[in-house]
Length: 154
Ligand code: NI
Image (cartoon, rainbow, N blue to C red; front, side, top):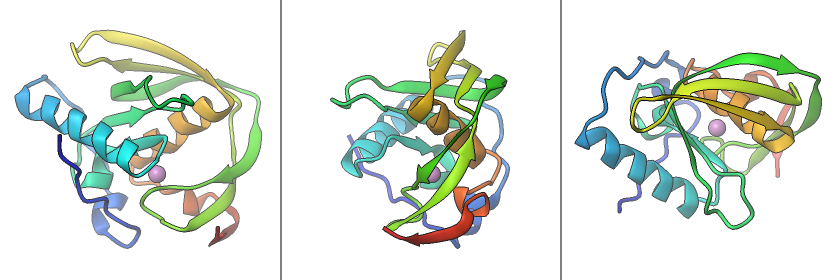
């Protein structure tokens, strides 16, 4: 278990496109464990690899109350979306701030799991928002650029 340093807005690594993962290995397994530890330690509901300085298409999410239901997404892409929701959003890379962002209310995501098998996830409300927010990170996009009226202190 290791907590990694979370990069904050202004760090160029957060604005870069991430590369797809082609094979699972010990180093990546360790990275996934560390990302989960880092997300839980920071009380976040999601963390993307570029937030710990790694430009790979890898995301961890856990929107459960107890923080015991992690979702790991490798090379994720949104393949369907529906509806919309407008609400407050925050990011571990933009500490102490939030902003209002409109997202789809439902998304379907295609990704690979830790065994590199294809998985499909569906999410609504907070989970849909988390999928969109974290997948944006893999393309160098921070929610601040989508926040209506900008970001403000929490
Ligand atoms: Ni974020």
